[in-house]
Length: 356
Ligand SMILES: Nc1nc2c(ncn2[C@@H]2O[C@H](COP(=O)(O)OP(=O)(O)OP(=O)(O)O)[C@@H](O)[C@H]2O)c(=O)[nH]1
Ligand SMILES: [Zn+2]
Image (cartoon, rainbow, N blue to C red; front, side, top):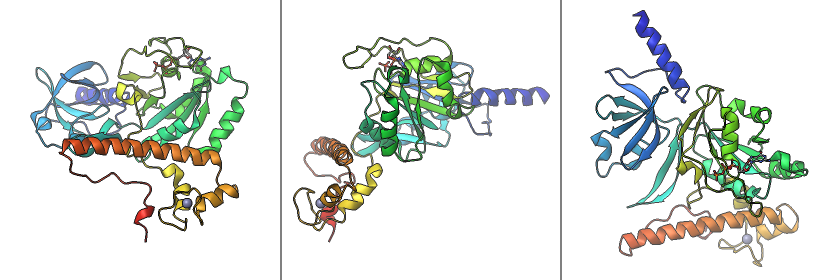
């Protein structure tokens, strides 16, 4: 009995280092593992001790199954031993990062699950772009994961304080913002609260922002290839060799999948960060106000009296247009697929026309 209890405790300890927070281990000779990658040929799993390949059970392959029920990166799954091992069950997810996707019908595509913190990394160099950070935040909203904004390359800029202050003004007050030097271990210690045992984090941001550099600093070794940034556009080359799950010395883990790195807006993200502007637009005299020269336009009034800054309005329009464009592309594609019949559009933020 004693040995069995010991080995359960050890198993639990190992699983905790790859982000497991539950307490019940599966019986029936099954074991628990985490999905770290998905290939055409099957899944790559990690059980806290080693990586191994696995196939999904037949029921996951059934046609018509809601794709969100299939195992995805980040999932904790129960595995039955065999040659090869089989995934027989997906454990309940604590968070779900997803994006809109075009398929046979309009649906969400899962990017990763059981992520506690999304570390949104932006360089304080030419890469610095507050609107892009806002767009990342809108993607993370409703996922259950907490966004954390990281500003790298603090050491390269004398006027960083101004940029940071500007950003603090724009972002929701609860969003943590940490300026840092990704090459300096002392500077990266601000991340400790997000990388405790049982925590899962992902690092997202444009190429060259410093993801590999920061990851190496957190790992305490130079395991990932980093490339010199071309000075003209601050972009690095895509040199990261793919490793999906990294256990950090601090006890937490970092999930690093190509899908996460390519996190993009797709047309269904909500615009809650601009809820104040949406509320303003609802007050325009005309339900279909274009917010140009219409009489009684609440947006123009707010712009005139300074309640709304031109910058924020521009950002809103940019995000809005991007979203509309993506939704339209998606709609056109879906319409082609179903032979020209119109479909229900994803919810549009410009609902004024429906107002009476
Ligand atoms: N001075 C300074 N340079 C940094 C910092 N973080 C990253 N760099 C440099 O920026 C360049 C790009 O960093 P990477 O870590 O390769 O960027 P990445 O986000 O992983 O890029 P991809 O692999 O293309 O996605 C490298 O030359 C780093 O040395 C920092 O905080 N300060
Ligand atoms: Zn208006």
